[in-house]
Length: 201
Image (cartoon, rainbow, N blue to C red; front, side, top):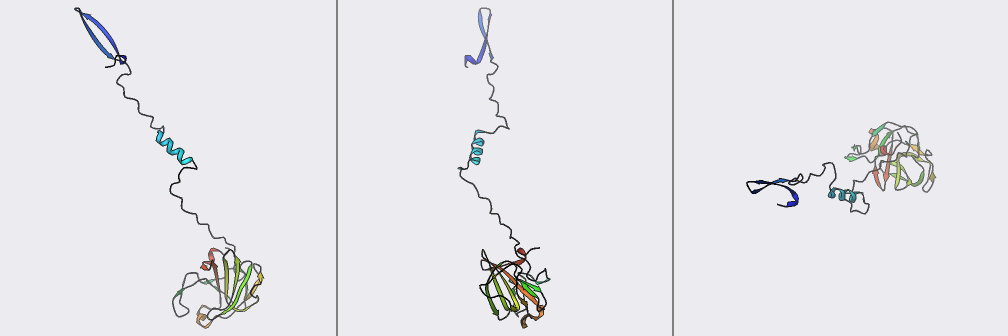
């Protein structure tokens, strides 16, 4: 037993020296546990590493998908009734396929306008969809207007948003059941997308 840790009381009884050992106030006490609220050195190191830009990164957060910018207007001068939505099952051609655009209710001869400013990429006759105009809007975006009776633009021509590009025609024989309509599609990097995600409300 360490003498420094005790106090000695000496008693003389009958010529014999008796020692009563008494523990010092702090002897034998366990060190007090660290305050539960105080961070440990390991926690301090971990926190510093998390705040240090040079520290190794952990799991990367999931990428945030930006919403589509509604930069296109309706091509019939107002919001018409949608006869068939994008991705709907289209059985009008005698088989089953998914619609790659919107079938918009229209009247024969109704003006069709550019949904956004761009350049005419093509004016072509399609065996099923009829006369179609494709506009290139840059940044990988194109719009397609099919089922026209006539086109008032030519390939390479620049057009403004809302500028007339043609008129609605009669539907092809295979699509007569849909009534007079305009086929309107949007493509991003060559892939069809839902026009409703890009059209103004």
